[in-house]
Image 1 (cartoon, one colour):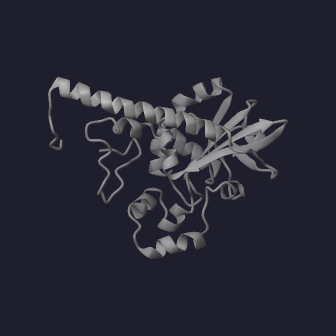
Image 2 (cartoon, helix red, strand yellow):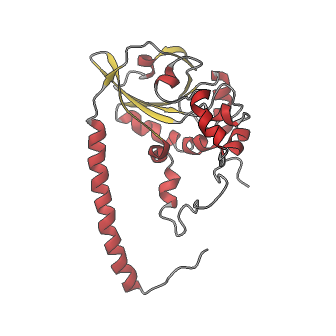
Image 3 (cartoon, helix red, strand yellow):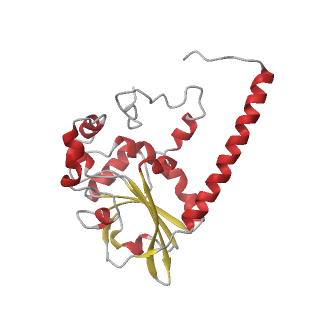
Length: 242
């Protein structure tokens, strides 16, 4: 535990009240941002996509499972992977508990990856998850929705030499840095209106922290995330922590 200033209960209460004002400001700003997300223009999906699911082949509209809204998490598990991305896996540990609550608000949730379905389902069994997971295979779905890079797009980054934790993550997935980085995590949201599927929202990078509930909890722990200056990725699959 790092050294930290101490104070009286009265000093804590005064400082906490000042911080609470800022937290409430952030909450109100977050509410405004959520409204702005919902006001984005919807884009009709004109291309036909097909997915392999545990219930057989399905189209995008069939993934809605009778509901009006669909959220897909593009989980990094490419055709060259032997196991799912550890970071995506850490987020996925929270998905099962959310599914029933999302369904209750007319939202279907599923993960989508490009690895073969049998490999996805075997990994899901290993991790003890039960949320829906479908395979987009080598079709256009992931590239069309920003969840895949080409090798040409990756070349400047790979040639730069500063790969950080990427080599270790790639090894953990049974592939090399190129094979690992071709996949990209994205959250995509869709809605059906007048029988037509529309894309309504998407996010990636730090926008995905909402999927990683433990980060919000760490932000409230005494030492926070403690990630600054760490050369290696600390996140592991939940069955790999020492």
